[in-house]
Amino acid sequence: MPSPSTDPHSARTPQPAILDVREVPRPQRHGRIFARFEELGAGESFVLVNDHDPLHLRDDLERDQPGSFDWEYEGTEDGDWRVRISRLASTALPRVLVDTAEVELP
Image 1 (cartoon, rainbow, N blue to C red):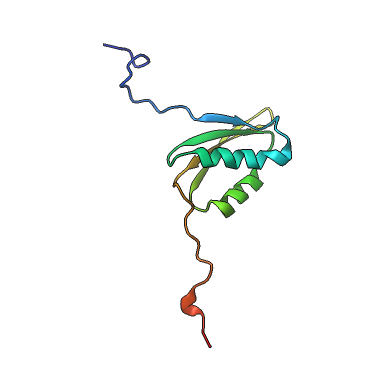
Image 2 (image 1 turned 90 degrees about the vertical axis):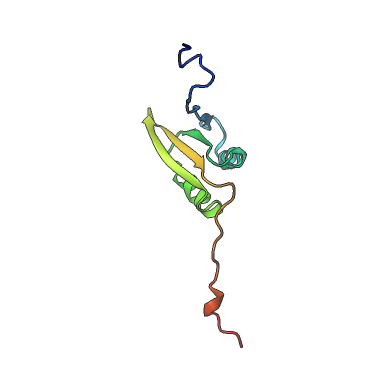
């Protein structure tokens, strides 16, 4: 019987790709991260490695990709942050900008 490591039919969850932006100039980081997010299919993820807590990135994703991503802190080590970013849907969820039922027309 083949071992799980050599059996091509064994059910293993692939390890997500790692995107390390610590050496990327700060003005280029969000663009690179958003580009990587756009490459993901629904259900796929990557691990972001950053030199600070990327809270502003999360705010940007929430603004631009509402409901289509998951954000999971994996931990910090030596001042570096690891965050798993997953794509939940192929497109952002629609937003309600105004409820036209409540708008009074002249």
